[in-house]
Length: 503
Image 1 (cartoon, one colour):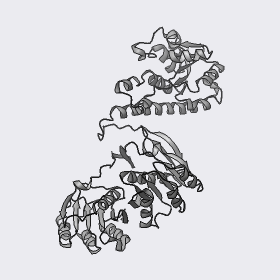
Image 2 (cartoon, rainbow, N blue to C red):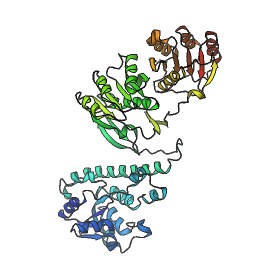
Image 3 (tube, rainbow, N blue to C red):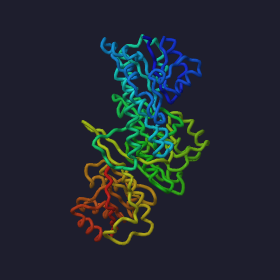
Image 4 (cartoon, rainbow, N blue to C red):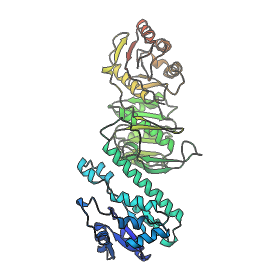
């Protein structure tokens, strides 16, 4: 019996040359109704599936290919018994399956209604792909137009089993991704619930030159629907690295946390400085001057359109990445003179749903830490009433310390962080280092801590350096000791009731 190619596609991209290639290789074409009509319009001889099975589509197309004649043709192995059964049934000898699925992800991203989404769940296509992939010893399966060119590069009878196995692996991944997208979409109204079995859907956005270090490989996978850095427009610069993307994630999250114009400088996934201002250029100048050493080789993110004047300031330094929600044409001209500088436009859209961290033997997952309580919800537990004008600085310090690596302390004054210490193994060292960096600027400034004070030592350091107000989560068994120091020193102490560790 002649060999066949089964074709059932919703995306007709590249189908014409592929179909002509298949017929040129001596394969007969078997296709579902809409695909068969398309191939016939191209002047190709094609047999509709229903002509083979004698079974018309039913249930508005929900049942098309679920028939023993089709699956015998796909699943019959090379054994004499299987081939005898296939021939007796009159099933075709299918050697190539070209199948792509209903565009569920696209409809989801278009915010289609639940009823329409349900109709975009492919049943027959998934079954065809799985059957063909299972029988890869005889069948080559294609699930994407991106595969067609490589497939057509050599004769069908020249495909070794290794190549067919690679196609099968990609097919199973394709189906797994499709199912994961459906599971994600249908459960999106239940955030923060962790099922017994978890599937994550990711599409490779790009390979990276290497991972965190040159001896490690790396890649960037986007989730669906794409948000944040997955939607970034890279205006120019060298290829983004693993570390660039990790740092950019911290920078853009913190910059977008602010309502007022803000600028953030990040190194090694922790803020060096953050500032607010009347405009982002003023905010940047403040952030730069707060730590002009650490900014070297860092990443700068702002939360407003970036113009020419700020672009000129940024171009005068060695930076790895600059991020903004938009960049003016004049600023782009300025940046173009620094060809290696990476410039990203990241839309201020979407939410960060979860954070994932690999550990030996598995991974940890949690909802992203997007909740940062406003000052009006904090508890004033000690010291005088908050001096006028310090609340914005406390909010700045609190948002910044939430994005720093634990243990973290941030000192802020006049709309800018003047001392940031993070990644310390104890909180008193973090406080000491942040206050040392602030120097004389600590007098009259405010201080934030991402975790509670287990002893009164941090409050004593704050008192000695002239800190006017402190915000921390509270909840220590020794909170009373810190409260006593604050009362005696006249330091305003506020507790948020929320911790912001970041490991």
